[in-house]
Image (cartoon, one colour):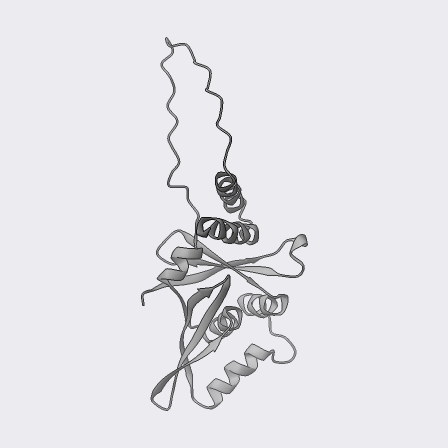
Length: 196
């Protein structure tokens, strides 16, 4: 299985999200973004560490980091390796007493631990191919001006757009507006419709 390295691009929320956040991961050597919907607690845990804010008492992910350090285990990397029915799956890979191991976990917990221990984050190629959102429109056409001596012809009436085309337009707008939570929902709806 091939993996693509990603970095944390940011966390976003909207008032209509009901307390959910979008963790946005971006390819290190590419232009795709991978939004993953996570809970408020996990978003706070990631944000506190990214901002280097030390809470008065250790949070859950701080406790896991400290436990691993105290037993001389080392987190080697984080893998987001599966996407089933809209749910992402992750693994924390580590070494302990000369042996390699891995733990199944939620991506939000894996990322919260990764930022604390400085571990690299990877996403399976199949996952980013399925759920990744390109940030640049490769299909954009360059506009060409008509020569001055030609009369401008009226544009032909536009064909009514299909539901898929309308969703794709909305997805492009959400990406342009950097509203990754809406983009993730639109991506999932498009995948469902294309599957039918």
